[in-house]
Length: 567
Image (cartoon, rainbow, N blue to C red; front, side, top):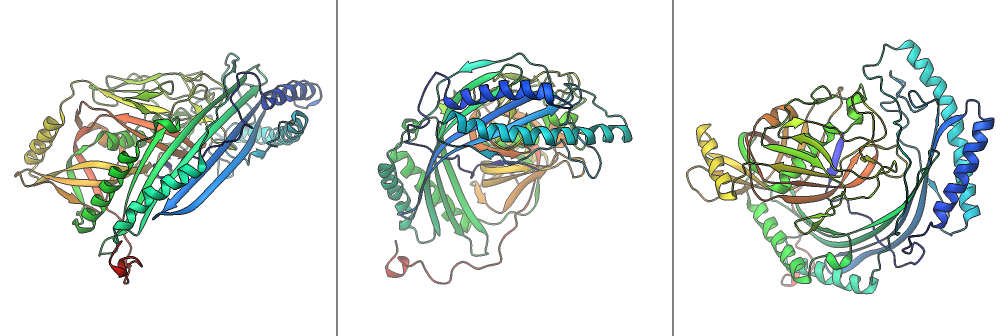
């Protein structure tokens, strides 16, 4: 199961100078380089079998998270950490200890997760090297044992469909880029968040109104036995607003808005936040009174944000490279290179080198991926024709090298992942024309209305062979657009569902204004920040099902402040 999560907040910030900006090799990089040289030389001499590849990576995180609810400070936490991952491979590039062990006792892609090692946050190079040394020893011994299992498994199983190597051969990369740091006036932001969240106190029907700030400075260090040595950093900040209520029939209703940026000065003004909160409250009030929609299939418009999530889930995960090789995956597009997979007016790229679009900072931007490969723009689909996959250093048939999309969270092994997925369309139309086309299509199908999916919170998709090839997207603001000219009607209680190949074939038009959806995506290699950019699309057939709901009634008593005249 792969997920795109909007509500998962990006972690926080630091005022500390511990991870201060620098373009010279820091103590972590020095420790990694020295221990790499020593460990690889010694294990080459004494190891039996000796490793052919070692990689060290460290994620250095400086974070702070502030949260306020209904005018009161709920939490204000500071964290500093360094997490070490060690990858030791026995064998050779074609077949090594990470190879998939097939069968009920195996795993889909090898050892995907091991707990990362907590390193000292003091800049003591000898202390850092001691941690690296112990972890290298453990990972080497585990690799030797697993390589025996890999070779035994290969002798008793049928030949594999894809006989590509386990690790691609790549040129070494060296870079020492400035480290990231974010300075936050904690007291000032605590006061601001309390002021923002206090706006919800005016509305007794809003049970929870929370505003939070998270700012995060991540510095990454990557060193491997091929000569790669990289130090680079980046920062992300997020201002999140969440509000929740309940309808009379027990259905939980919520609205969530987030503002993402690379620095605090790019966050919205206080007036913009206030207007956002007022709009969210208005939406929730309307949702409480809105009718519950019945299961439906028919034409629909997905706004740019909704379309971005739609493409991320049903398309983006299926063009990640490792899914084409893993025999437990559905491999929807594995054999479709240079064939039509989308309408001929749609192209798709993934470009982690893009920092912003339309003035909006993009979560999926990075300089180097987590294999130490430079980020690269990849033309995935050109005018409906599939051209490429998103590749890490795990090759697949026909794609023997990485294109800078190997990504992971600490503790995981890198796989091909999305960064900034960008959907582009030719022959676009205005919003008014797209709406008219929706009404025309609904009338042609004998429907009394079509649907407009205006806002969305996230979704998930299933890509494995053991499950149905399906997806589910969670819309929040959905409207009936009537063919007879009646006013648009807000509805609630729906999930957008379907299967990918059918859904792709029903897209007939696109809008002319791209929108950005910033979020965090969870899959085999953990949670990574991503962005999806798309114009609105018109599809001739979409399916929605009823959302699950609670049977509990709304609170019997009014809120405390509401009992004395309202908030």
